[in-house]
Image (cartoon, rainbow, N blue to C red; front, top):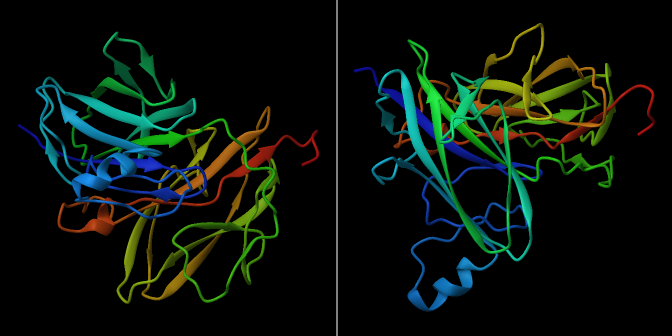
Length: 286
């Protein structure tokens, strides 16, 4: 029976942050801080204002990042468990990538989705049973849980500049000489994205683009762009914002070590996203 690698990734509002264990906690202020192996006296405080998530087989066994899965009848069946320990109502979106290409999937009720929107009530938990058809020769499966998919970051200052010399993993910019963020752009506008590597060794990425959380081409009609960035360097790519009918969220995501995900290599389990860019139709003014 053929085996497949799997990863589950949580995308935050502005950046992409990855945690591999269900009992690690994501703080709602978009920081990369995590807590683990807490003392019992601190556990109740840590569980407040957090999001917990995990992936499980149908018999309740935890599926870790970099694990192998064994589909039955060319279909992967699993449960996504989310504990929303926040005192607010919040929307999420769920999408699935097969070898970094977005695919449709079914819920337990057999409804089919290319992206599944759901809302969590304050301090609630949810189990989502998913059925994912698996094509022959598939190597890697990725599940993305997107926080506040309808939220648009228009109100953030558009002149945010990342200090030169930092090799941000993924960044959309309108200036080839410095990493200056673009919060709002017009359809058809030409921009650049920077793919960086802060390590001393070459790093390969698989890069995808999402327009309102549906996959679109990155550059030159490529749905997945594979590139290797030399150590302590960054690469610049020119691209064009896609056409839209209404204001849309656009985001680029870089997956390091494509098809080499493993439990021993934490970086291979991560994903790096650009700031969201709101694309407006040409008839609108940002």
